[in-house]
Image: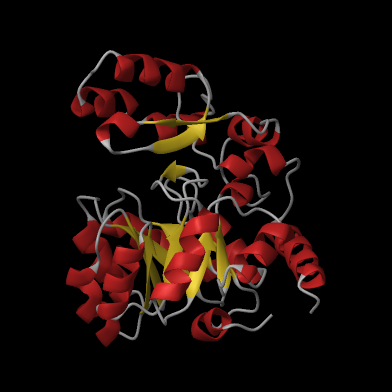
Length: 307
């Protein structure tokens, strides 16, 4: 399936793996790229040298293109922005902020820059500053979210910009890919389904929590402070919601969640940890390799789109 995105990134399939903190490391990124998509290493809050080591390990596993997601709110964002240039990375996605200050440096290095956006206004601004494409991410996705749904956000951004649009949020099978293409997207970004990939280093407790999730199991916390986060319901989300209702400050609530994603991903504490996952968790029923996932999704999407 050829689109402007597959041409731009030099990939076989119009599928990008989300740059999920603590999850998107070298094993997963390399496996997705090897399977014909674009694997991403999630910079998250990691120092530049940690990201550099991840990039080098991924390159040992695949000769195909891998990208890096730069989390702009990270205290190490500037270092990571330089590391991607030094390590010859060809694709960067950005989240949690505006990448304008790094655009000139990245463009001079020949890097394709793809910001994640949750509004038409930011998409138009990113196009103006030289972004090669944008990821339009709806609130169905896991982790930090905006307010618009994928179904409403994608076509409005497609109509507002001339650069290609990648749809994200609530996409986990070929039906979701076909629907995104009907809305005008030219690729999709998938996170939650890849969390349960066989190559994913996520603790088995976390994977099983996603596999066993029902349609109503996701919850959003943090709306009262303007920092909504979607995860699966557990003791942590209930406690957070209770404190939020009591009017605790953003700082107090933020302190409570410090380190809880790592606790869930690495230690398997799915009771007190933060189990970030999108609303499609209820659709995911088994662990597969990245190649099996991508082949299955593409076969279904192509059949539905009559290709």
